Length: 406
Image 1 (cartoon, helix red, strand yellow):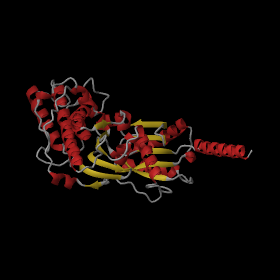
Image 2: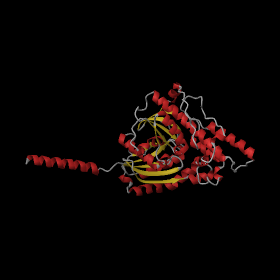
Image 3: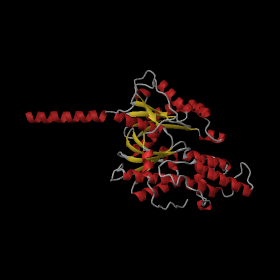
Image 4: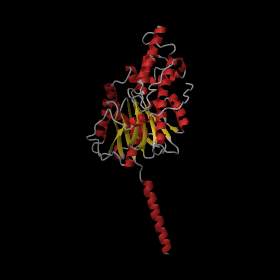
């Protein structure tokens, strides 16, 4: 009789424990992104499931003006942010009071754009006990891959977009070693400027495309070998990037060709596809070579695990297929696995911000009772800068064939 009672008690206790564990609702975070020209919001749970998501892109507006005008971006954020957040919440079936936290991008980015997200968050959380998590835009990009795959630390990360280019070793949720970064302009910005110089907005195949997307599209039809563009910083044995000089090379080539063809402003060169192919290759080869040196540095210092070392590539330019091809060549040659988040998660979005909030909740890092007193930061450092140490290592690159069909 006693044994039977003990057995029944154990079964009841085990069943109650299982019920408590199964009934505990997963932590859910609302992410709000407004660092540049996209207004994004998403509700994500701790298993990486996107419960609700909405995004308003300002691309068409900025295509008409030839570039992002900060005060115009701010007005558009203000017009759409309430609707976007409400839509994400409605899709998730949750209210703001049901959330475990709200995470919002506060740095870096356009000051006027960042201000909208932070101000709206303050209004949303007014009177609620829901915690607030300020998010670093680049950290969110760096950790997005862990939303779709349980990747352990450490891993090497390359972030390339319209506003950034950097290489870093991710050692933890908020622990990064910065190996190198753009010294002037970002690769996406360079490609956009090249597209404008080529008047691609007037090309019949590119009217609805952003600048970088148009260059990639036309490059598929071109021959990159028609023009010889020098890869930047060949004698600089570090992992920093420079794209301004490369863009100047391309613009000089365009000016010479326009003079030869008698092309006027607004007209498109007959060899525009070849110019796009050459420009795209030069930009992507520069990225690949700096990444190769970062891999060799990390291996020399035993900063990456011996088993399954990984290179993660994220950011808007990471969606460029040619860039991924060249990075795959480098990864294969170095024995690293190349991981890229899905294209929809590479560009700015609310899900990556929400996931950064989940990561911080798990670790208990940077969780605040409210947004009160938090300031947005248009410029912000990223991790611990060891780029000078990389430079002092003076690592030369072994020859790797970076020749692919466009």
